[in-house]
Length: 436
Image (cartoon, rainbow, N blue to C red; front, side, top):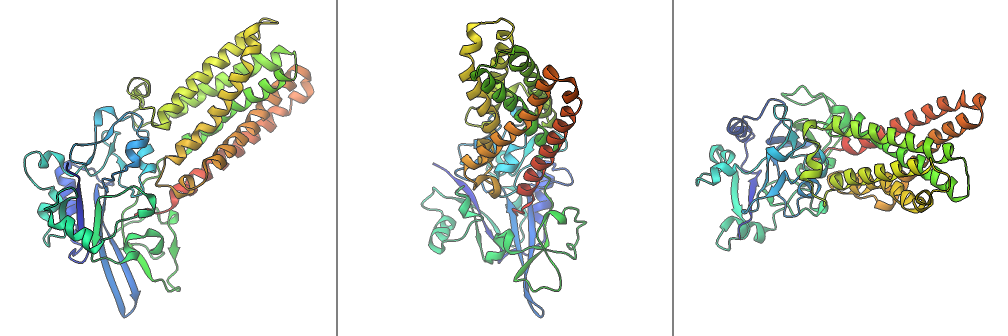
């Protein structure tokens, strides 16, 4: 077997950025994004200071979370152990960007698909080294085959127990570092100084922990690259609308279970509201894709191991059950209406809660991945009960009392806006932590 990786010797690196330039030239990487880049980390206090150069890139992990979360198999492991990508299958969902603990992936502004270091596979196939290796003036970048017993670099890694980035993420990365300082590999140990970054117009510093110049810090980031936030307003909106669809039906099935016989308030009204919410959910999800015309790949090329794909099927199943519920409510005493109470309630809970399992697949986001999935699920089901209850209350008021209906939609709208802002902050907080 072959498992390729890199040894990056920070002690030999001179911070010339030849690797970054060569990578951009080799792969026509657009401005504003990078497959490989160099961090400058400063340690100590004047006059006893040092600057450390650390090359950053995909770690070609043995347990790659980007592969696990990819819904269409666009990210895959090649026969030589390299994590590669297939442009033709990517839908631009950006799940891989949140799953990667190393901020190694980006969405190409030209193709709308996820790109990253792929070890210059096209060069390897013809017996050439990756472009970054061939141009490095100090040979600070070395290819290593972790499965080759004769590989001297692999032996050095084992003998010296050379470190990797974020080992606590348990991704088993195959990029090791030599001659570096621990602070250079730990972004939380080297905040970005609030006087900005050298040679960079840093626009995202507010998202990074900063250290005022009046405070002494053991290390600080003096140069790095910005990374775009993967999930934003549309994903927060999807969490709310999906929750409304689930919550409305939870309240409706509970009402049916206790014998409420007003079919308009218990069946047809909630069904229409839930279907509208599910339709809006689908629109938001598709609109958030960078290749929205490929959304149907979720069903034709989908991997059920990804909760992005599994979630799409859950929403589809929920839509079918809600439609049957609404139709069943049109006929008094219909058998299927009673039979659907339990399965629809369970499917509604799953519709609300499945995003918890998706967030758990985002191994690069500590706030999501390290939180118990039961707590994430409980949060989402609670939000669904609140948002869905607000909408269902408006439906009941419409049926019962026109005066009450005059203010309940306003209250419901206020609840939904609050939930959206709450979920937006939840997404932003997790994605703001620096990973590189």
